[in-house]
Image 1 (tube, rainbow, N blue to C red):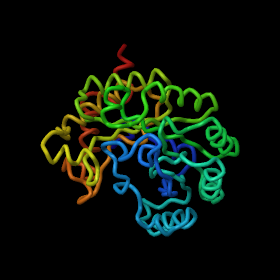
Image 2 (tube, one colour):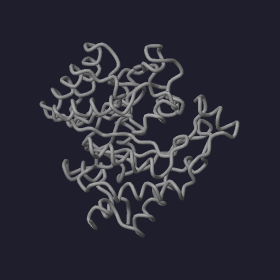
Image 3 (cartoon, rainbow, N blue to C red):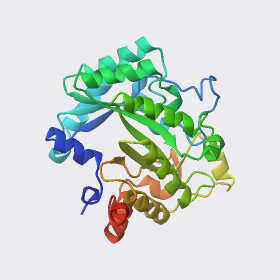
Image 4 (spheres, one colour):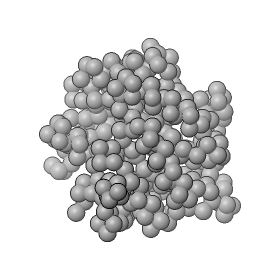
Length: 309
């Protein structure tokens, strides 16, 4: 059996709502980040190199052109991978970090496409002012399925400082409160394997995030990419990384401690070599997923621990 048998997945939720599988179309809208442009700092978070997930073609393509290019890939795919409804995903850098009118123009360009039924906006907790939340809520009021994706990574302030995030957990809590007060759905990104963190830290972060209220989660293994600050630490032997087995074990426990209504948008991630430096298992798309499903088969799926209480 696949992940959907054990986890409330984003794909299954979308299929139930729309009667068909949705596909996310990644958009690089030329945003930057306050942790790179000097507003908060320079160099970005220690794990980050945006080239690991942005499209170089975006340098010359408009938002509309990127969407059309993405849709054409799925139209030409094998029948089981095809789609006719899509989600516009503003992913690269901090996708709420610009002037209000600029943001509105970019979001408008994406949602005007009749095949776009959803809007996902990836950002930092410290870059979401009230007027941007109001803007996102206005799209939702007009029938667009809106998700605000917040890169928290960990609730441990000591680690947030160590990885040069530039914000603390209290900042995240404030943004979540303001977003959910407007009826916006929040998906929180968490990284397992950050420096000096252990399984107990991951569980503490999950508990803290759930206590604040969250609608979705994305779980990622820490992986080292070329061009990041962490690449230097890894090359010098100062950065231990999670094994596939340890990652799957921790993710399984996190899933079992998560209420059934929370939607998992992702439970693992991979990157391509040569951009990926380590761990090697993150180069293979399905290895992490298979290991997690194996763990869930053995010990129970989403909410299992909560149901036993």
